[in-house]
Image 1 (cartoon, rainbow, N blue to C red):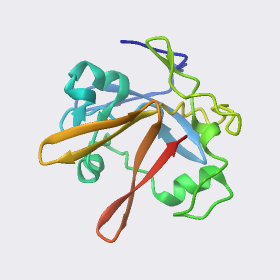
Image 2 (cartoon, helix red, strand yellow):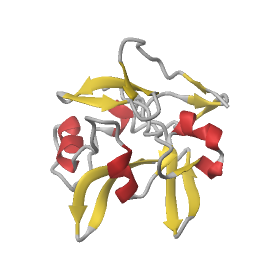
Image 3 (cartoon, rainbow, N blue to C red):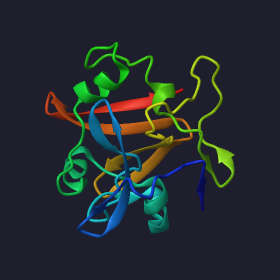
Image 4 (spheres, rainbow, N blue to C red):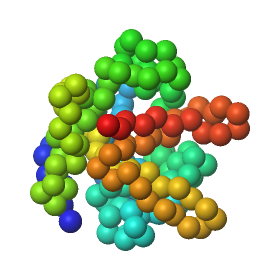
Length: 171
């Protein structure tokens, strides 16, 4: 399995001290963001339970797991930090101008991951190179994976009504 068109700066890497996993990073909105999904194997599940996919798509976590999966010194972004990337929306509202700025023109095994959509030009202007690797629903220890090539899902550090708040990019 391979990812192409995900360009990296070899000097813009932080290592997770727990497992020495390298995270590519970039500055956006005045904050340091990881460009690849969290892949700490101490929690969550690999895509379709195939451990080799952790290094490609990252891992799928519950909100509680995601809060502990960040490398030391890191944390999940707040909803307001996602909103600040767009510059026009309020927390909790849609971010209409953000999708194309964070979507990467990335291919998985030669297949373009984001479908062409005239209304959303993929520019990756913020250099986050978001991939649509879907999401997982969890029941007990069972993970069901869905939305590959359609959704990118991100937990925030925010909570509403006792539940974690997430952001989706979809078409």
